[in-house]
Length: 286
Image (cartoon, rainbow, N blue to C red):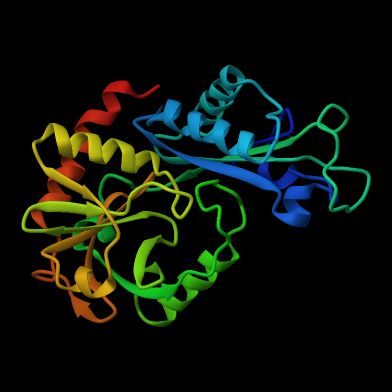
């Protein structure tokens, strides 16, 4: 079935979707994005993604071409038009298409921002990676300094993903100054003696929407949380490790740089948090 996508105000078959060659998202990665999970045909934590989108736009002095109310309706229309039950919706907002390629930003009052959305079907509540766990390698973090802004500048994460694939792993955790920052597309955690350890929020990592929910649920379940950096060696010696993302929820990490973590199988903490997340988040889905 041909998907229906949304491009700059129009719902179109994906085969007919077009953008200008002068769109700054295409030319300069001058764009931000969000991925919202869909479960049972409803949006998971949409308000959290909207809040982060607005923050990313503000940090880059960009203007959204639609209101947040209109954005919600576009998401709902795409779910309906594509009969999406489980998976996600990708959203990208660009600074728009100026008259030519230029390092100077176009005036937002003269050039409207671009917007693209599309759906994708994916098993997010149960799949092999979630059930069996994933292997991770470490990669030097060479990204730009504002990782808290969710931009489409994803060349280094793509490079890291390819390094992981060539090494027979699924994911890559970035390391800077000896400490893990985050995964190529997720936040990173370890568990030691029952304590969940994850890096504190800063410009060094993405402010994960799923991270916020998972830590909230962990504290409500009387689990101890410590926000601080950790090393790869510390992670290898942890009782368990996991990653969180919008479509991965809590993804168990069973091996890091060839060293088994804990028992080499998904641990009880990440498993329990995943169960809580799947139980609780649909209650506030839109």
